Structures are given as structure tokens and as C-alpha cells.
Length: 418
Image 1 (cartoon, helix red, strand yellow):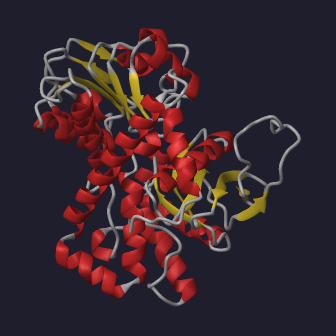
Image 2 (image 1 turned 30 degrees about the vertical axis):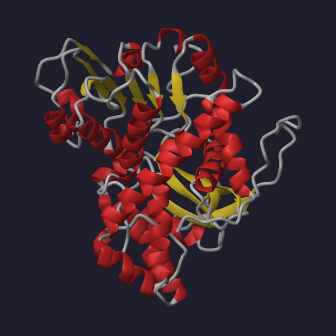
């Protein structure tokens, strides 16, 4: 396969379409852009800036062959609530590039060229700050940041991209396991809220054994949990006695990923039926891959007690209503529990722009400082959301609805975390 890159990309601002639902309660995004090659009109992606009331819109840039504007819009909406719930001085946004991440992973020079072209089209969109997402990484963000620095004539700015390598002044979300830090805080908070739940001895299934999934597996196992199931895009593994987390972590970045696993398994699912793993029995299910992993199609077959949402929008409100009120399965909402990365992003922005603040954090040890901040913030938000759910006049209010109540209040609030 040989992909021809565009010489440049342009951004076309999209207006509200006639087929948008006029009865939808969801806020209309402030700005929507289609990124296209002016030479042939080919669409290369989308940027959605959902809301900037608390600051510029922060959100990841994901790369996939099947990106849609609907997916990016939905994720941008969630980013608004994630950043607001964490009391960050940031709005919500999201972007997607329509490309094969495997191809560009194997061709790093071409990927760097694509990210440079992408940075050029982002530069005029002043209310969007990019971060890594599925298919992009810290090196890609550094390319965008460097391009912006060249254009601005300074490296001390709060534009372009975040979650860059630490050696270049960034906060590496994946290398430091910041999202997983938040997920682990969620599990610890559950343990304190639920009388008959303990992490030690709990059986865990992780869908999406990538940067987030692998790190939360290690953290939970170190605390006495048993990882009985794991999957990536290549295979799904199940062993009720427990999987070898160390081996999976060692092979996950190899070609074919955890399909290379050689230790004992009870069941192994191939690409055609990987999602069957979601239906295996466990105590904690952690979806950490693409949106809509749990839907009306499989909600009746989910056999866990608790869901900790590592991915963005792994299920929708109606499915979660059914799970909580008909199946007694509590699902902890994505934008509450997986906010570790965005907290790190805001700290990086402030460290980049404020020399004194940067020196203070470095003196304290930025990783430990961040881990404590993330744990405290996410634990507090889970407790507040849980209490809203319990106290609400609608006794069937689900955790996600309570989380939106919390976030909507903070969208209008001047309070900030950092």
C-alpha cells in the first residue's frame, strides 16, 4: 500500500445542516471544520470545537480509517464535560484524521510529514489544542508544537499540542500512565463506597490492552486483583485463573500484539469475535478501546458488577440506564473517571507558559504531584456524582446523568483546579 499525502490541507467551516436534529437537547458545537485536500477535495478529517466557555477547546486527535464527523462531534461534547468536571481552564474539542494508523506507524517519516501538514491547517483554528488519542502519540504532538513555535517565534506558548515528551518540556500522559492512574483511583473509591466490594481478589476484564489498558492491569494486579481477560485489535484472551500480565505487556507492541501470547488460556477469540470477551464473567469490566463497545445488542449478556470506562463513550445513556436499573451493574462514566490525561495536559500548558510555576512543579517532582492531584480530583468527583445520584428525586437516575449534572454546573463556574 502506498498513500499519497496532500501537499497541504485546508479547513472548511461547516454550518448547521438541515439534517441536524432540531429537537436534540445536545448543544450545537461552536465550530466544526472539515479538513480537505484542495487539489482533489478529498476529506482528511474533522475538527470539532464544542464549547470554549472555560477556555480553548482541548481534545485528542485520533487517527483511524473510519473516522466520521458524528463520532468526533460526540467525543468533543464529552470533552467539554470532562474538562469542566475536572475544573480545568479548558473547553472541549476533538479532532480526527482519516488514515490508517498502522501504515503510518510503519512509515514514521511519512507520519511526521502528515503531522506537519496537519499542524499548518490547525494553526488558524486558535480555539483548539490537540492531544494524543488513538493512532497518535507524544511524538506527533511534539511535531505540532514545534510547527506552532516556529510560526509564533517562541516556545513559551499555550497553543498547538500537549502531552509531549518530558525531555522536551511536556507531560507524557501515556508514559506516566496518567489515565490509568485515574481509573485506579475510581476502583479505590468504589471500594470505599460499596460495602461488599474489594479490589483484592476481584476478577477484571480489560478490553483494549494498549497504553491505558496495560497500565491499569498492572496497577490492579499489584493491588491483588486478578486479570482474567484482555483484548486488543488482534485477539482476546480469557483465563478464569488469571492471565500473565507481564507477558502481555511485553508483547503488546509487537506485530499481532497479544495474539502472540504463549501462556495458558481457557479461551481465545480471533478478530471476528473479539467482542465476545465483554460477555465473560468478572467483577470489574474496563472498556478501554473504541466507542460503543456495550450497546443494546450485548447489554443482556454483560456479566460484571462494575464498569470503569477507560474509553470515551464506550456505551450510551440508554444502555447504562438498562444496566444500572435492570441488571444492577454500576457504570462509572468516562468523563469522570478517565480525566487523568486532561489534568496532565493543563499542567503542561501552564508549565510551558509560566517559568515560575514550571520550576515549582519540577522541584516537587511533577509525576508524583500529578498522580496525587489526579487521584484526589477523580475520587472527589466520583463521590459527589454518587451522592447526586442517591439524593436525586428521580430514584432511577443513573451515574452518567448525575455526572452531567455535576459537569453542567461547572461549565458555568469560574473555579479552576490548576
